[in-house]
Image 1 (spheres, rainbow, N blue to C red):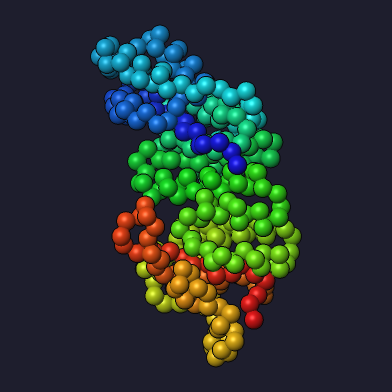
Image 2: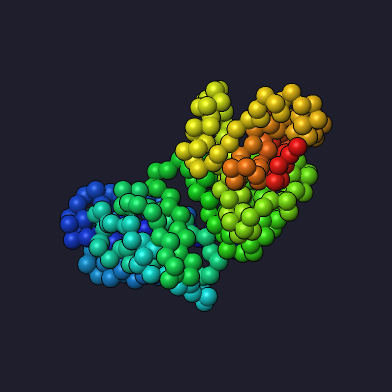
Length: 321
């Protein structure tokens, strides 16, 4: 798997347009952002900032400007030798707000300097983006994950998980069984039964498509289902919400519930706790299932004393009896 994520700063925060340079809002935002030392400035953004320093803004006291400049310059990204190929299609949905018109190209250039196999999180302003964020077949690895200036901790966590899943896709082959190794990192809110992955070989269809579908379905279970179950108690409402996220799912029907042998196959023991996983997502209409249940598990040592909300995954298989 790739190395740790790289956090980049959108030049929207530091490279103004001509109108932006005369706008107090731009400089106020630049000052506030200077204290966040997490995101780094890519080489292209840093070069543009050094050019800007040759003509200090009139709207900031000179001493404040040089102090802030020093904070930003100290956060320059060291370019990687394994430069990835990117192009402006990566940021084709990007339009600067108070920033310079060339900032989109600077983002693409900064992204290229992060090196092959790197997940990139961009601290940005969501209003600068429209449509889908870069996926160009001419680019080597154009994946870019946006982190809004004021996004919540939950949003940051989900962005990081999506980035982790994208990184896994770049290093695993087409065999969906390879996902088991990375499952704890990709889906930390899921609790897999020890035998959950044993039936992976029974899934039918193209292996690459199955791999992608599994990541999507398990991702939705991890990111959304606990909260969805808290908000909605009706089966149809839950199905509708999952469907809007691209996942077809349902509980077992009456015939299956009346079949004691079939229901026994859907009961799994998690650390001494018997869990009935009769809800299942459908990777295909008539086959390939992920059997799950929403509940609570005992906390681990680092999780305090309270039970942890989780999604139990009992089996990933073509179909249970």
